[in-house]
Length: 483
Image (cartoon, rainbow, N blue to C red; front, side, top):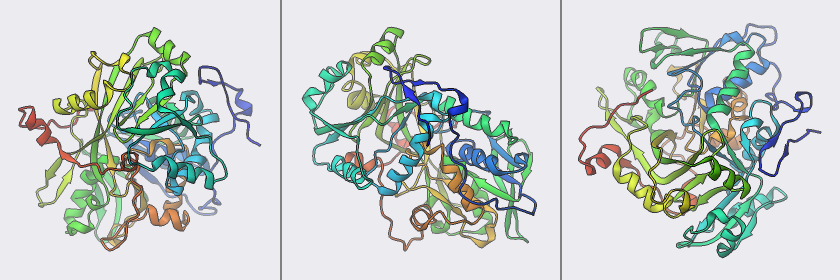
C-alpha cells in the first residue's frame, strides 16, 4: 500500500525518508525490445510532454543514452508553457476521461521524490458564473467515481473563511465550491527535477533551436531534425513535443509534401497565447497568505489566481479570456500561428486583465499596483482542447509521433502522460477512449468538446490576432520570440 505524504498546517509537504517514498508507476507494458536492439529516440521539446516521455522511457530502457531530448534552451526551457512560477494541480473536470487521468496523476504530486517537494496542497476555490452548470457536472463526475471532496461555499461567507479574499467582487457569480484535494506547484523547478531524473538514468539533453525535420523521401520516413546552427540529430523514432512551435517545425515538410490545408497540423493544433500578470508581494504578505491557507482561486471563466511561494514572492493573475494568435503567411501560401515575444503584452490586454481580474480578486494585493512583469503564455491548443498524441497519419511520415495540444490544461499530467506517449511509440493502444480523444481528427469526425477553459465560463473564447491588439496601442509590428 503506498505511503502518502503528510502536509503541515501551511499546506506544504512534510518530507519523508526516501526509502518509503514510492516512485511514480512505471509504464504498464512488457519490455517492447526484449531480445532486439532498442531504437534510438529523438524527443523535440522539453516541456510537459517531452520531459514526461523522456522520464518514462528512461525507466525501462536498458540503455537510456539512446534517448535524446533537444530544446531551444537549457533545462528548464524558459519559453515553454510548462515553465512558470506556479501552475494549478487539480482533478476537477466534468469530462470523465480527464478526471480519471487527473486522479491518476495527483498521487505522484503528493508523494514522489522528484515532484512532491514542489507541490503545495492548498485546495482550489472555484467561482461559478451566472447561468453555468459546471459545478454540478464536476460533482457528478466525482460522484460517478465513488466520492467527492468538493464542498459548496456560500459566496457571502468566502471572506470569513479566507480573510485575504475580503473585497473580492461576487458580481456575475451564482455560487462557489472548494476542493481541498488540489493545489499548485512551482512548475519550473518541478519540470527541471523530472528531466534531471531522466538525465541521471542516462538520457541525453541537448540545446538547439529545431527549424525543420529530416525527411527521407525514398523511405517515406522522418529520420531526424535540423537546428538553426546547422547541426543534425537523427534517430529511429522522432517525438515532436514542441507545443506551440509544432506547426513552425513541421510546416517545411508539409510544404515539401504539398499537403492540403485540411491535412496540415495547423488544423489539429494552433499556437495560442494567454496573458498573465505577476505581482510581487512582501515576505509578510506571503506569510499572511500561508496563515490564511489561501487556495488557488478560479474566477469562473475569467481567470485564475495562484498564491505566491516564499521563494518567488509572485502572485499570478491569469486572464483566461485573452486568446491570442499570431498568424504568419509562409512562402508556400500556408498560414500558421507562431509564438511571439512572450514578454511583450499589448497595453489593451493589460488594462483588460486589471479591470476584469486583478482589481476584483484579492484586490489588496494588486489594486493600485503595477505587476512585476507581464507574460504571454503560449501553448498548442486543439479545437476540442483534447491532446494530440498519435502517429502522424500520412504514411509518407513514418517514424513521427506527435505529442502536443496541451491546450492550457496539460501541465498537471507531467507525472504520467509520458507513459501514454511511450505506448504510441510502441504501437500499443491506450484504450479506445484515449486513442479516439488523442487521435488525429478528420474533417468528417464529430468532435466532442472538452472545452476545459470554455466550460468554466460557459462562453466561447474568441481568438484575436496579436497584431490587431498592438494596432490598438499604435504599434505596427509584432516582435519575434526571445529565449
